[in-house]
Image (tube, rainbow, N blue to C red; front, side, top):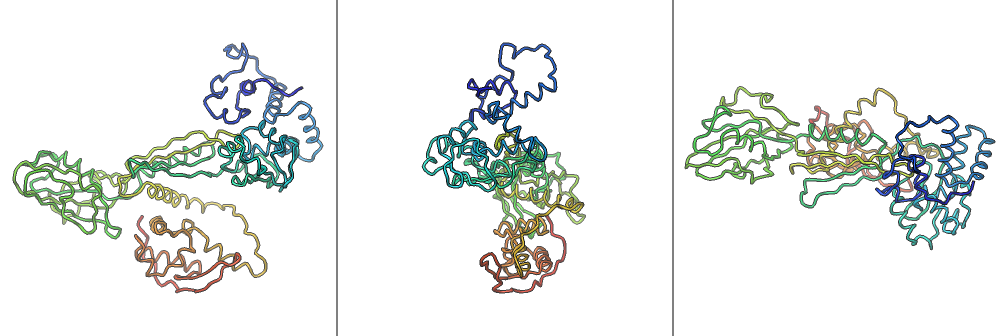
Length: 539
């Protein structure tokens, strides 16, 4: 059988799937499989009943698909198959190794070409080096550890630059390592059907210019279905589990319930309650409750900025209208503010018997996230296009940034999933030996390099440390106890929790160390932790 030279889009339509024979066109709306998802020919669109394919027909279709994907002639495929039969093990796996180890396939897999056809052309035109030598044989079987590189003089060609920009941004398969900046790659192990989970390699955030409180987060690639799993979990946490401050009750002279009006005030009590819900407040970390007072002595609109200043409360939207006074009269009001989570109905607020009897409870919206939504689209890794791309859109009320809201929600989910890890043993990768006498130094290096997310601290402590750019235990031990107390949101409880962690790991506060040739040298042992763990940290 001679090599096929006709329209390659017909081959994709014949197989009923994308074979990626035309490079970037296969990823656009112009793809023939997307536009005409039926077999070519005059009977392609026939809706009549077609004969069920036999087993031989199915095997022949798979064989034709392999030949068309890798661009092989009948003789080339037969030679590869005969060699695969003679090799020990499963014939199918041996054939897979032979096909994936071809030089033209590796050039395509590494992102140096947009299609295997273009990769064969680059090899034949002597644009590819193997271990520093020019090689113009597309069927050359690359061995493990051999470096495949684009010649320096060829990197400025348009098709190669385009391929590197579009396809060379991530590791397509686990058995290939690629350095896009150097246009260099190598096969690190025997090619296999990639059974491992793909990990995201593109995580980016884009803030809207017209609204600094809104941002878009993109994460890709994800295994099929993971986009909805992660997106739905994060959305639920963002809309229901973040803490904030809000008005939960108020008291106005002459008002005993919400179904009445206030003499001399344009709005009724229901309208005033709706505007109190729109107040955006921030309570100091060490304060859980506060009372804001208001006194009005003249007619006109009353705004949030007219509330008496309180040292523990910050009003984010001081221009929020509360109500409008028509007559010259005195009105006194008190707003009761506290911290909470999510949405709490008026009846669920506990009332202290010492409070005035005319206090009116209202529904409270504590959640600082106004909107959270996500979309999932397909993205490509190597030859597969069924991976997920997750796009998460978050808008807050200004009391917290979108990135902090997402980080808190993710940390909260991680904190809860941590309990399920204890039910089984997670396989760990054994550390490489460091030689005689290097065990203790290697252990210290691993401990200091551990992320604080994995140290067992509470979510609030983790977020407080991260806000001060403390990411690892190595960053943490460089602080003294008095210095940590100056970190925002770190109080006595959090300090006791951190001290308990350092005692458990055999570390001290105020340590000084340096890394020389991969070894950790202690310059100052620091001070033994003195703070005690006095209670659980509120989230």
